Image (cartoon, rainbow, N blue to C red; front, side, top):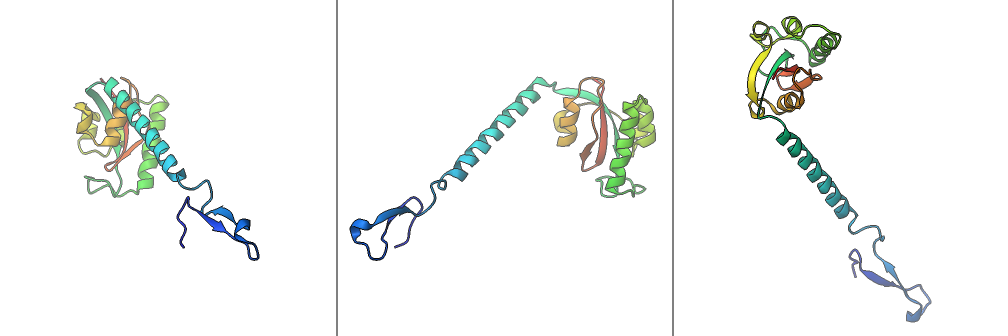
Length: 168
């Protein structure tokens, strides 16, 4: 007879009569629901996180204005032919620009010095006014989380590494 989890079978020790038989659980008491309980807790935590994110998004404006610095690397989408730096070098370059900005350097001057976006230096990195859905998710999330005048941390997207400054 094959045991199923949670089913008890008689256990008889050699030499004892049926009266000497006891029962033994086929599986330990901690099985049979632990994963189910953990999964439902995890789902509840994910639902709560999603609800918090939705609440945060609903408090944000439908459109904002921003400028950015884009440091690209050899694997970046839509990169100009002249960009050959590695991803690691691009990240270091973006972090260097951010450190200068945090140290008081003018954002527009840093755009001219660091951005790889075609036409970005001429525009001062200005993206105009846009809706969240017009940008790739990571960029949109970071930009919309900023207050006017605030500068983001380095944000990675398929296009490279961005430093975003919210303008309106």
